[in-house]
Amino acid sequence: MVNQHEQSPPRWPASTAPAIDQLEQLAELRRTSQGNRFVRRLRSERKALIGLIFLVCLAIVALIGPYIAPYNQDTDDFGLFESPSLSHPMGTDSFGRDLFSRVIVGTRVSFTIGLVAALASMVVGVALGIVAGYYGGWVDSIIMRFIDLLWAFPVIILTVGMVAVFGAGARNVVIAIALAYLTNFSRIVRSEVLSLREQEFTTAARTVGASDSRIMFRHILPNTAAPIIVQTTFAVGLGILAESGLTFLGLGVDPSTPSWGSALNEGRDFVRQAWWISVFPGLAIVFTVLALNLFGDGLRDALDVRSVGET
Amino acid sequence: MTRYIIRRLIHAVFIIWGCATLVFFMLRLIPGDPIIQMLGPEYTPEAAEALNRKFGFDEPLYIQYVKWFGNVMTGDLGDSIATGETVLGAIKSGLPKTLSIAAVAFVIGMLIAVPAGIASALKRNTALDYVASIISFVGVSMPSFWFGIILIILFGVRLQWLPAIGYASLDEGFWEWLKHLLLPGLAIGTGYAAILMRFIRAGLLEVMGSDYVRTARAKGLNERVVITRHALRNSLVPVVTVAGLQIAGLLSGAVITETVFSIRGMGRILVGAIFDKDYPIVQGVILLVAVIFVLVNLFVDILYTFLDPRIRYG
Image 1 (cartoon, rainbow over the protein chains, first blue to last red):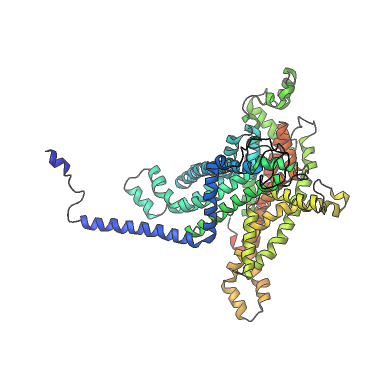
Image 2: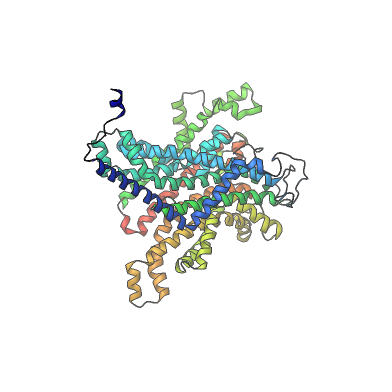
């Protein structure tokens, strides 16, 4: 009795088993070759590669920043406004803190805010876009009117307005940026879904009794992955730019937090004495966003995405 | 055509109504009692009482909404809490400055983008094209306010060629006005040019491969005529849309860049009002910017249908 249980019967009649095996092998082969093709294309995109390498370095700096910074970012016992030198490669700021250490540690703040805002924006935006495109009708109307309304405000005005209502601070900045860029995701995903829902595999899924949410998230969503990934890459860059802008205006993260935007905010008051306070944190922003844009652009070509909103 | 425009106009009216409603609820969304927030350390029960009456917070929400909406429609955006001047007055003093910055930035952006875009399309895959493409990537990735600071350090502080900060109105003479706007205009215009250049390049490249360009060449027209008369004109259609849509970007850029150059335009007024918790000003400025944004988009859409007769469906 026990033995019979262990030898479970084959799932398919013996005669068809080899055919099934073959099919599975074929599918596997196609999957890997598709993956390989993508990797090959990405490799041939030199700008994507440069962007990616820089991003990986940056991610490492964001992770271990506080351990590799030459000084503690809050130590303020150096001279005020020391110009760049070997001991302080980026000089010191108006409090006598080492700017290089603050820029390194600030990587984490700026990067995290950009990343979290972009991901939040993606999750909500994609969900709204799929639901609007899939159901159509009044659901679509309501969601898209809301998106149109958000679209009517320039991003900076929208974020500034939200921060005005809910107050400054990292969390509110993330929410404001996420909300402001959500429209991009919804619009892109909705237009993709409009054509995908008419395709045969959707009809097939419906015929075998798949639920709406299963069709939306298991069948349609994977097919919109490429433009979503590309857009997310750009959104991280836009998020970093928005955060630095808000913080520069004094409406972003707390000024004592070592972020690139807060360094710029401080540097603005001292352009005459100490150019380095403005120049270096700004360069950090430029290189980071540049890397994201290069990577996103290369990714777009490699994934063959037609027209994702320009940066 | 007319039907399309009317439909777009109605749509725009609804969007503006939506914006106004959203802005109305802004004050009501403030966590806690907005009156206490606004008064801050100057809180006294009498002052709170007076403000409550002024904003009509003692009335039911729908009455507040109708009254507020009526006021906005008649151009009454309320008074500033901090200075007592009308919101409309504050806007009137700030708007010309912001529009001036945006206008100069627009011209500078065009002056950079059009030649650069055409050149890099015609000299595709040459060193020139690559350099232009790299510069454009950097331009897109650069915060305009940071570039503004760099320009101040370079041209205002080091070389002292141009005034580093401040604004001169047109009454003080065109050159004086322009001199103060060159640096902020350049700060914003460069990013604008970077985006535009890529579209001009892509548009021209697409058109250059088309049949009618080949026909024009086959006729024996010289290359310059083919490009200026046949290719360029058609390639500019999508560029107009992008140029128009990015005007909103110019305005947003101006909002932050004003802080860098200490110009009290709409952006500076808005940020100052947020620090002062001067919500009537915040409401008024945000509403105005949204309305401008919607109108610009509307204008661009309509312009597009004029430029490309194929798009007259709506």
